Length: 102
Image (tube, rainbow, N blue to C red):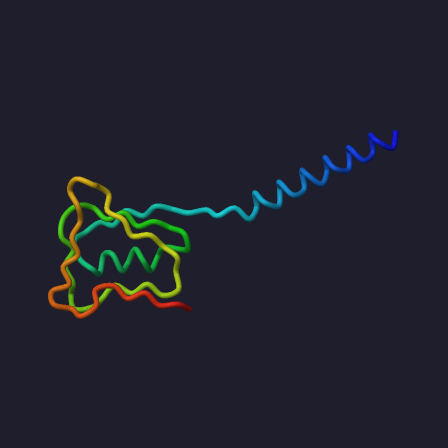
């Protein structure tokens, strides 16, 4: 009887920890950037949360004079295609993407 109680207790603790781990699991979203300017990318950066991925379509994304700013977020900016890649045209900007820590 004592063995069954220990086994039951271990089972309950295992279920508890698995539930706790599932509640803290990282959830991430994919955002597809539409348009063709840095502002379109910046809008997607502003909406994105930690661990999200921004998918940039093919073509050239041109700067309107401002760099893309990522402030304290852990995000991935990635092209949608390996064969037809996206281009970021900074139009002479010194910095095209600025990443800052919180």
